Image (cartoon, rainbow, N blue to C red; front, side):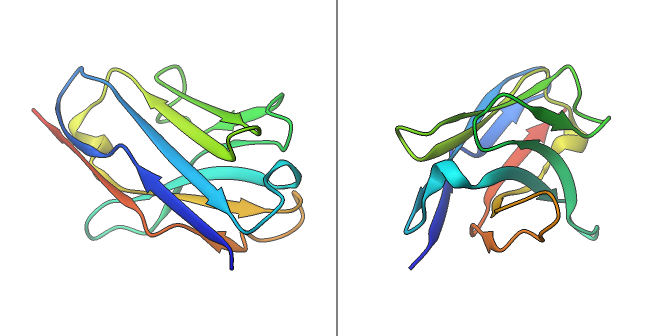
Length: 119
């Protein structure tokens, strides 16, 4: 049974930082490309960042570029999202997701962790 479990969310003031973690189990983690998405109230889920299976290649949404960093530790089956210079518009539920290739859809999703940024 595949599980993705996010943690690290919380309430932070604008300009602050948080680091999200996503622990994966039940899959060969090093074979999966990982990503973070977020969904704000009343909005559709949106892409935030992704990383390839080795951790060498990353990609970011324009809205977070330069502020957020995605990374992974294959020895710990964990993907991270370091979020700096947080803004109120970053408030959302953050989800991690896993897929096997760039051509496939994200097959596995976590339950999400709430991030709230106060002004």
